[in-house]
Length: 173
Image (cartoon, rainbow, N blue to C red; front, top):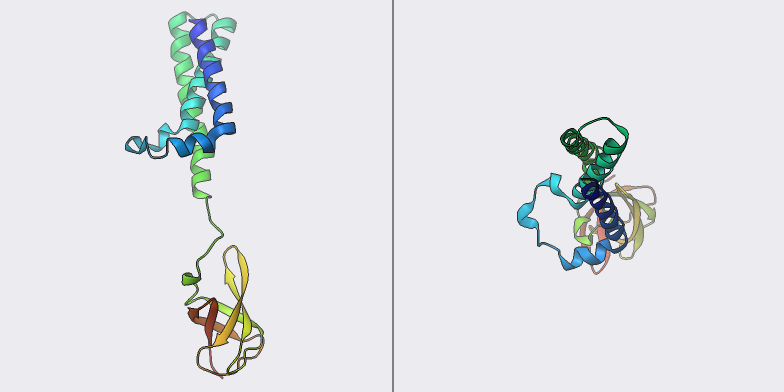
């Protein structure tokens, strides 16, 4: 039985190391193969931690406790399941919720609020700073309604054309 525990400990450890080193490469080869098996709890990180902790618990309990072979097996399974739950709710779930992208599309700009940083003339270009969750971006801007807009004025993006945002004063004077 100890060879089973050692096999699980070494196999789970090797899988964890290989998935860290070659995870993106392997992931691109098998992308979508296991989509039918889309239970969150059966992710590779969870399964490898279960196998590894089962093996480690079996070795330790078998060597350092007076438990019988069947009791060691049962306790190893229970320990592996408990560690899986801890890893899932302590690491995997919070990391899924923290995946945010800082990118945006220029098509998302209409309706966004900004502030003029370089004055916008009636027939020319200026610059506006648009606030996003991830930070601020500066864009070349022109006046949508052909009015001069001074620095510090709050504006709303009306449209985008050829990389230029067309803005209008949020509250015209």
